[in-house]
Amino acid sequence: MNKQSTANYSQFGHTIGNVSLVGAGPGDPDLLTIKALRTIQQADVIVFDNLVSKAIRELFPIDTPTIYVGKSKACHSATQDEINQILVTLSYQGKKVCRLKGGDAFVFGRGGEEMLELLTAGVDVDVVPGITAASGCTTYADIPLTHRGLTQGCTFITAHAGKELEHNWQALAQLNQTLVVYMGVSKCELVMEALIGHGLDSLTPAAFIEKGCTSEQRTLIGTLGSLSDLRDKNNVVSPALIVIGETVAVAGQVDQLRQQMLESVEPLPLTA
Picture 1 (tube, one colour):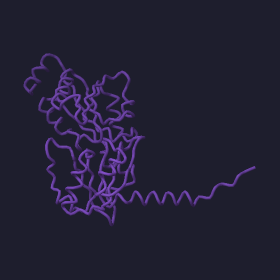
Picture 2 (cartoon, helix red, strand yellow):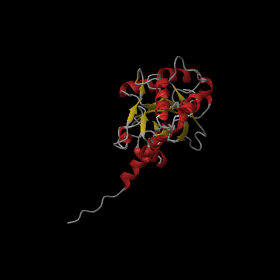
Picture 3 (cartoon, helix red, strand yellow):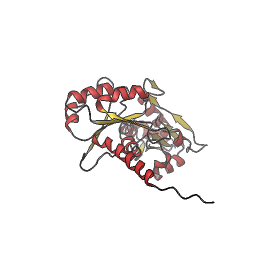
Picture 4 (cartoon, helix red, strand yellow):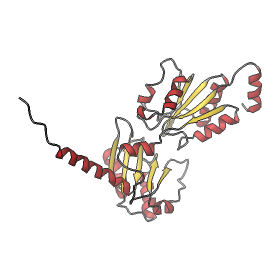
């Protein structure tokens, strides 16, 4: 439906609803913003993605209808065009729609595309930011994205593409920044070869963060040159981030300091 048909629809006494594009964060329900939780609780219907964690789904009001439109590798419950149509149709039914996405809707979440489609159809949209995985997961893994003396910046890229990745690998290899790769588990060899081939040291610290910000989070630390072995030996599966850069080594320092703290604590005397 276009704007003209939307106007005609309103003339017959129907009220058009609205869509809230809500970032659910990387998995831990405690990382939901107050606004995100309020939007979930007040929605007439919730349309949610595959990366919305089970713990967050458990917060959905029991009487609120939900529609799953998750997409994972080689398994799409709905195409993007179908999702857009679902959102428009629900809005034309006068529904207050919570479109819930993992992380932040505007960071590799196609939120911008959905926003433009909805506005083109005459549907009002508001956006609720969420903590993106690169921030939440690295923080839970004790890996700072920036650190004085190591790096003054960070760059997020995706390893998911329709055909070929079209990154400027030479620029990425020379940035001296923390590099976070989304959706890169199956493409880690390509990432390794491209960065090393354009001059980044193969001994640069690197890590996988699997199922970040959930009770199942694993952080596996190695080097850029060992990423594929690290993945294969530990059976790393999606969702997982790849983090590359000198700040990855900070996590090891944190572990050592925490261990020293535990060892320095004197046991309490036994009482009779």
